Length: 338
Image 1 (tube, rainbow, N blue to C red):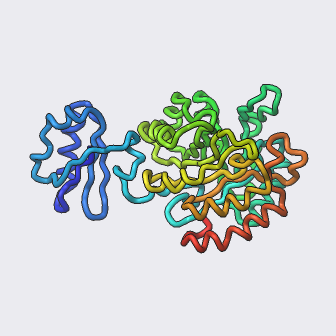
Image 2: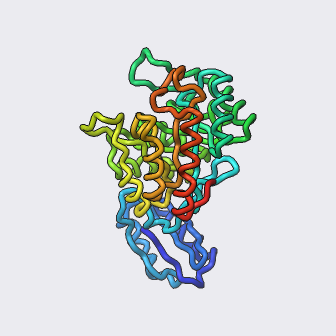
Image 3: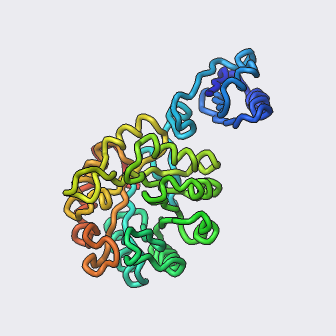
């Protein structure tokens, strides 16, 4: 339930009501706004009604939260959430470009790739140290050694980094190395992992599962948010359909729809969404047009020798073209490059 207090209500009034909510084992939420204080109560609505909070002199209105995803919905928060990523923020009026190799292979590869993306204006570095692959014979990543290389690269080029976390037991080990966790498509409904990441304050990019509905996607975000971590960035990375021409079907209408239903920022991964290098630029432009807050793309100084996803990775020429062609689209959308 959402409880709107009267404009003259004080913080003490809010605390009094929150104490009542907590006394019956419901989850209290405190959301002070510029004009009034809004409270939330998550749990059995019958129990809440038994408190007769409507009779409190400082309560103006009580209404139910209709969405199954309560805390990440716009019913709970109407304004856009902005999430820190290094010194920058994702969401609001900014557009963020995160780029880098699919997998961390060695120090030279990361330094050369980071040099390219920083040169042309990217504001985030990606690189996988733990690689969940469909085939057990594919490159699985350098694990902690890869994290060390990624951290060294990020410091050298003064750029925030993100890498995929695949195991709840890795949280403490990985947290010091990177600015953000990424939960990949295969782990979108790994609820133990979602809860473990939710118990940190680490910025987390949550990718949509390859067969997940939008509701399932937002409910996965709700798992993280419900544990206390509000620093969530959604990522549309394409879904599996009967179409075989591209690696996945990049569901951009999901971006526009989610913007109306959730206050969380959302970025797009056109590299995994298409699997085709030549489609990354046009789909990045489309992502801006439908309201995305950024993109995350694969870029490698020499894709021909990449150990993972070379066919969809951008080389320097393609990355320069991407950044130059995106600029007018970013400006037209009313955003600025973060």
